Structures are given as structure tokens and as C-alpha cells.
Image (cartoon, rainbow, N blue to C red; front, top):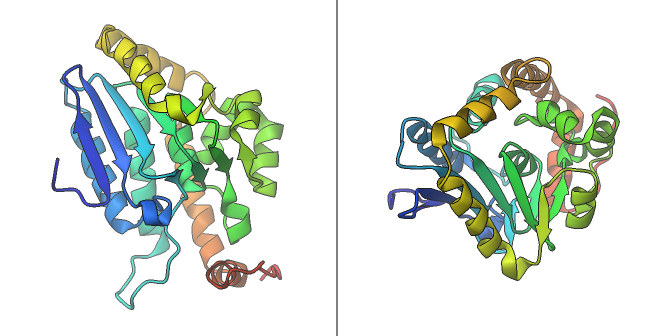
Length: 261
């Protein structure tokens, strides 16, 4: 477990595995290395019967600010559809884990970081947490499973409001609209999540896995279909002048000027 650099992985004797996104200087924005390491851990968990519960949180004062949009070197980059397949794979790996998953949201959860939290089975937020489907402000459409998750959590019209305006909402509002299960004081977050994880780890793991799978399949088309559509839409977005303008504005710390091109 010590081989990872962008995440920390800890196991307890009671079968709780904690994944901590570990780029606090970037509010735990997901770079290529973090995507790779998350994939490695999640793939290993599918057959690891010693792990009963998975907890995901962030280092420092943020959960995850989304995909890292920092300038990159001139090394060749994969085509956007290839990149989106990586995003799709990790979202499906998370959803397909037999173990219950808990997001311990300790700060900002934006974009892919927001949907990483929403992709967990249970979400506990500190009272300092904030959530945003930030994509529209970056000239992008929702990905990492958000189109599948949001309507199921908050209803279609509320999901459209969150997606189209890309507003930041606080933990109290997130609890009010059903986006999270619980909000607790920041000083109590770790203990509350540990208590829930401990309770789950003592239950029958096969029964929990079956209930989780049945609930995930209970409404409409599968998440895989939604993720394929997200990837195709994002490939269109990144080729637009608006997406380039949004990235430049983000780097320049100004508001973008969209032209519909």
C-alpha cells in the first residue's frame, strides 16, 4: 500500500479500507497518476474478501476539486475518447464494488470530485463541505456518472438546476435536497464515518452486496450506457472554442466569455 503517491490506502483489522485522495495542495484534484492509482485499488478490491467496507475521503481541507486542469507538458496526450474510457472504467469499478462505500466529504467536492462522492453508496459531509457540478463553467458537460446519479438522488428538475447553473451549494442545502445522507460537524466527521463503517463491517457481506446490486439496477438504464453517452458528449465539448476559452479563463482567474463556437 505504500507504493501509491497520489492516494493513501489504509486497512483496519475490522475490514475497513480507507482511500484518501492525497494532493491537498491542489484540493485533491485528480491527475493522471491519481486516476491510475484509483483504478488499481478499485480493481483489487473486487476480489478482496478481507475488505468489508470502503471509505473515500480527501487529505487536508478538501475532498476533491475535480479533474486537474493545470497546464501540462508537451508530451503526447491520448484522444479524449480514450481518456473518457478511463473515467468510465473507474466510475463503473466504484459502482460495481461488492463492498458498501462511504464518501466522507470534508471540504469542496466539485466536478468529477462531486460525482466521485455521489458514486458512493452513502455520503457523509462535514458542515464545511461544498458541492458543485462545475462542468458548465468550464465549457463542458457532466461526466463521471453524474447524469446517471443526479436524477436518482434529487429528481430530474433539481438535477438540471445543479447541472445547468453549476452553482456551489453548501452541506445544509445538499442534505435538504437529498444529495447527502448526513451532515455532521467537521470535528465529528471521522468518528461518525468510522462508526457507520464499523456497523457495516459486522453485517453479512454477501447479503449487503446483493442488496446494493439490486438497488443499483432498480431504476432505468444502466450506468454504463450513461457513461458512454457522457464520453461522446465530452469529446464534442473539448473540440469547441468555448472549452478552450474556459480553460484559459480558469488559468487566468477570470470569467470566461462564451461564444457558442
